[in-house]
Image 1 (tube, rainbow, N blue to C red):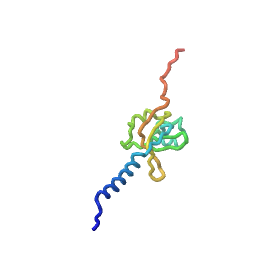
Image 2: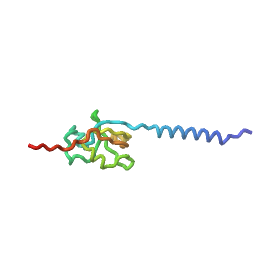
Image 3: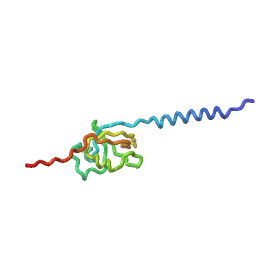
Image 4: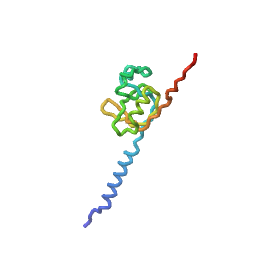
Length: 125
């Protein structure tokens, strides 16, 4: 009489879990350049001249002209204040693009302001 060994089952289950874990951990973050702006400004194409009252909700506008809602769900590696500081500035970010139907959003892991505003200079006249 031949019986199945539990070792074979454990080996197959372990291999499956290793494969699944490899897919989860190998998820690459997108690296993009663009600007933090308001959604209305992105829709109207007014990237460099966004009014403060149009700043909410904030989106990430890419150099290619696409924009993503910014996911601020606490799983982001960036504090919300950093987005306020980066508003209107050229930035580089790394994040995971999340799709929910046709609307895409990005969960930002790292945010770097590329050209911070220069200090004010006062001229004597």
